[in-house]
Length: 267
Image 1 (cartoon, rainbow, N blue to C red):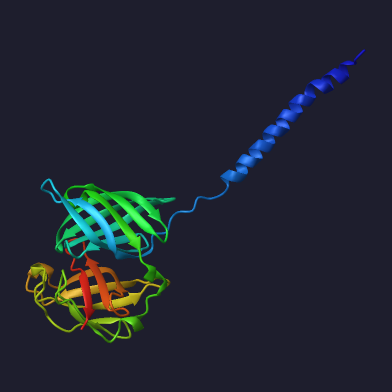
Image 2 (image 1 turned 180 degrees about the vertical axis):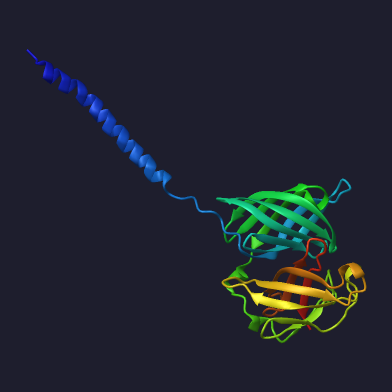
């Protein structure tokens, strides 16, 4: 006859095995869950081959094929020199590949409007986004990461040259940058953007460690239009190779009200 103790032991055995199996599964699950999800890194320069389609404010669309961008920290700036558009943004959230940002958008250096963006960052490859706003703040865009990001910013690459914006879309700056990063106006030019007529630009250019970008702080002086005279700006610069090494300087500046941005070439 089977004893009561034996019956109890055999009854508990399957329950014990089930409990051990459940713990084993839980351990496997925990092993998967502890792997962290890394957030995408958008930092760098995005070459002027980006595209966008945004609202023209009159029931049509503006097609952009020269969109370029610079990203450092939580600041992202996008520019189309052909269309006179500058998007100056703050990245408010990155979760994995997804991101969100708030933008101030300037048309021909003025008339700022606001928009939000949600999109996707593929580190070292691209950024795509949807603009939620009105006019040029409504649409979609794609940015392409530049191969030149492996060339670290160095004042030796841009110093002791006359950088000339003549013929470019945007303010027609002419300035030089010395070995200490001091940016000095060389000519009070007639600008392609009338609100900046007569302005001279002075400031500082500082390489951002480990990137291809430069941080820029600048002041416009002697401007014909009082509203922009003696105004301060911050932004980024990057050198680009179009024909010969570092022959183009992309300069993006803004202050929340105006944005005297553009491209310059070696004079």
